[in-house]
Image 1 (cartoon, rainbow, N blue to C red):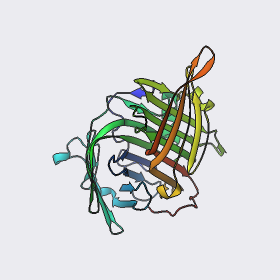
Image 2: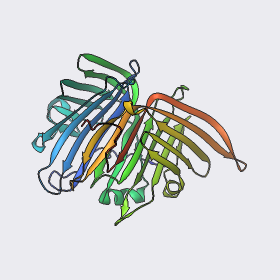
Image 3: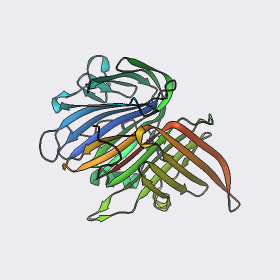
Length: 338
């Protein structure tokens, strides 16, 4: 199964001195009352040449696409400090902002806006691994690897956006960790813990293309669904190669299967619900990311029975899914805001 529980999956991988490395901790969640989506990022970049730096990012997504606020504060690497005081046990601390296994604290300001957050989470007892074990180490060395120590856990606390307070009282969200040498050639990612049908289901998927030397490799698609207490995984390599799909902002359509299950789905959002941000790899190459935490998602689940695929259920989320696209060239449909 695609889970580990050694308790180290969230720990910082950067040794605080090596060049050519990037590391990110991020959280995504939805505010039930307002329908807003939240995206928080704690990042470290150690370029191949030049000084390392860290940054805090925060985005509040308005479900109507009219009041979205995005802020990034870049800091000198001296602001990356060990835990002390009330944040004892922090995984990463940047100035007065920090993240631990059970809490996220932070504040960013810019463009006449401020976003601050203080959120408790109930840590998961196992970490979701997007990639199979034999691929993780290779991905880390060549590109980057990804895991979700808290794939779908309750968030409690507040996010303050200017003079508006968003209070969270147990809404489910995701906290993940990524590290390595650089971003993939292109990618798509989706997550959902909020379904219209009231089912306690969790969906997570990632697809990407890298290169084998100068040649682009085939797209690999890793899909997982937790449904009615069962882990339904399609992220073994043989299923990742056989999965089908196309991702082109703002839509990702896909299908995956294993020995017993088949999942067909699509995630999308109108362009005004995305923000575009710029990522810079340690080698100074650029990537552009279109992200939204208020996307739509539809899934159809089938089970193999006596040689036939029988329909089990339909799951959908309206403005409650998380969706991201990345590539080397900017998306002409929207401005780069960060």
